[in-house]
Amino acid sequence: MHAITIDSKYGVPTVAIHTNAFEKAVQSVTQMHGMPQARYTFVPQPVMGKTAEQLRAYVDGKSPISGRPVMQEVIEGLTRPAEGDRVKETKFERSTPRLVEAGAEENLHRLFLDNNWTDKLPIILPTEKKVAEMLAHTSRKPDEVAGHLRSNQFRQHWEFTVEKVAVNAVMAGARPEYFPVILALAASGVSARGSTTSSMAAMVVVNGPIRHEIGMNAGTGAMAPYNHANATIGRAYGLLSQNLQGGSLPGDSYMGSQGNGYAYSSVTFAENEERSPWTPFHVQHGFKPDR
Image 1 (cartoon, rainbow, N blue to C red):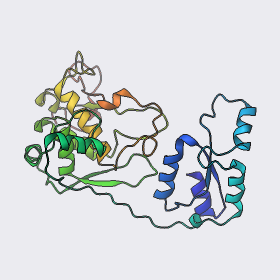
Image 2: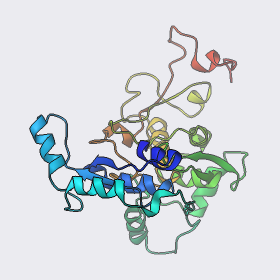
Image 3: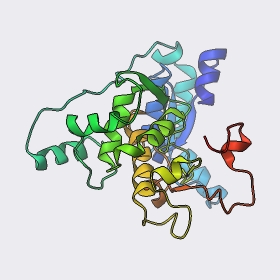
Image 4: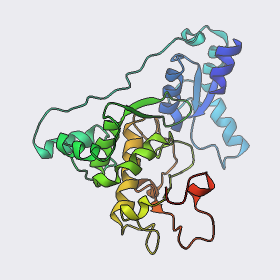
């Protein structure tokens, strides 16, 4: 990213050096910024824990991606014009079809799996009837914009509708009465499938009277797989984040090291307002206790 800024904003030829584990991510970022021909080269992963001699061998050696000498690629990048020197506007398709073709249940499950629309666990197929039942629990229109998400600051925001959120809520197995909470999470602009080089996961704490209305757990086992609302709201948050930000693919839009098992559930539970020694979170932010 710094190399793109130096090259495009200040007009200084720059060659970025990355480790080979970031190949797809580098290609994605440069394309997103309209510089698909940005100049870079790669050295082997890892660099941590290596001696000075070993690191020198990386630089004096060949790129594990192109097979060409690293320093040759650096020199060529600094001395030869590149097509990517001038930023070009790049347009991306940021929509998905509203419906898929009808088919056998087994084939539809395979379709969702193959298109990376799931968290690799079985889902509830989002039929029009089930999505309509979910939408009945909000006053917002199905085609109304519900929010915008992206996996990291280098990517464009995706815009999505209330209906798209409902589709993911159904897939997660959530009950329709949970939908207001799920819709609020979608509108937060914070992705549960964010990407950093650490193995982060999202956590959700729900407060206010709705905790009791939908039967969320704030006590024993609140962070464990024992409560339907806690489990499916968290899963819906993960699925909608993945699908409504344009995907989450390891090595491309997700660079979270070895990953985190908490990402399956997004660790969702209710705030125990009744037994907490602190003022409830929503009251701290100006809402009345019964809201």
